Image (cartoon, rainbow, N blue to C red; front, side, top):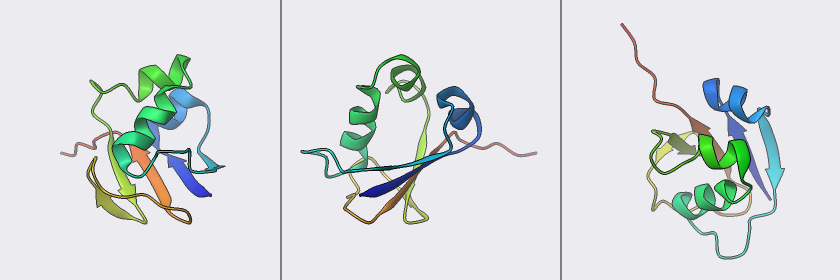
Amino acid sequence: MIRLRYFASLRERLGVDEESLALPPGVADVATLRSALRERGGAWAEALAETRPVLCAVNQAMARPGDAVADGDEVAFFPPVTGG
């Protein structure tokens, strides 16, 4: 199982702030996890579309699309933050 967390506008669009999920077969990195979540369709496909800027952290460390995910990980998705 992995723990998924969603922040800011992603949380609002998806209507969930966190969930536990059995790691889907064939999912071994951030990019394939995001793709698997998009396959849920609807708001998931839109919010996590490849064209949308979405950042990810694995176990509270910034992650890139090719970074590994494994059972027991916490994976967070969030939009880029701007400050001023």
